[in-house]
Structures are given as structure tokens and as C-alpha cells.
Length: 169
Image (cartoon, rainbow, N blue to C red):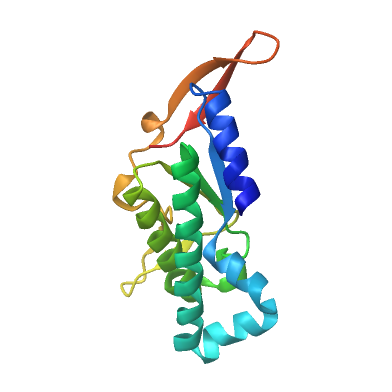
């Protein structure tokens, strides 16, 4: 972590007009990396209270990392959570774990006052009791404003040509 935070500080200081995006691994994937993934997925089903304690710990760890990155000059916090897909977890576990913990982390990032980007490949379904299926953009919660909220800033590259960075607000 110290190397990424220092690199963030250096990048932000050297290029103050260019957004610095710090990318982290999401809560479900991080948790599945701390313990054996098969064991972790079994615990989600068989010992949900213990799995949730682990996921709460991971969210706090990631939030502390994000806070240090923002203090160092990060403009955006992004996460990828490849182990949190509907295909891997299934719809019920997606809603119970991936949606819940990515949203918890997103709220923590929003409290830092920076945009949040979540990348999860695959199906992100949430099923409701009435049988309707709804797709949810996990993690963006109330702050989602659609594509019109994406800002583009131009900054010159090494060759003097304009380069673009995108940030989601």
C-alpha cells in the first residue's frame, strides 16, 4: 500500500490537471483472496455471519486504503470485483453479498468526496419477491446520474497532444 499511495502523491503533484484514478480490488474478490476461494464461497452459504464479519473487515481495510489514496491526491477511486458476478455467486448471493458490500464501500468513498467507479463483468441481477428481475448498478447508489455526469478533461501528453481522462461523478 505505501508504494501505491506514494505513486499517487507523485502523479498528482506532477500532473495537477489530470485526474489520478486509484484502482483497488473489490470486497468480494479481496475476501476470496485472503482465504481459499472455495472455502470462502462455502462460508457465504453455510456460515453467513462469519462471512459477513470478514467482508466488513475487508470493506474497512479498503476504505482506509482509499482514504490514504485520496489524501495523497487521488481524484477517483475505482474497484474491480471479478469474483462478485451473478454467474459466480448466483442472484441471491449477489444481492446479499456483492451488492451489499460494494455499496458499503461506495458510500465510504463518497464520504471522501471523490467519484467512485465499479467494474464487475457479467450478470448483476437482483430478484424481487414479486418475480420481477431488475439489473442494478452496484455501488453507485444515490449518486448515479448516468452518462451525462461523466466529465472529460483534456491534458497534454508527453508529445504535447491532448489526452483525455474520464471521471464518473
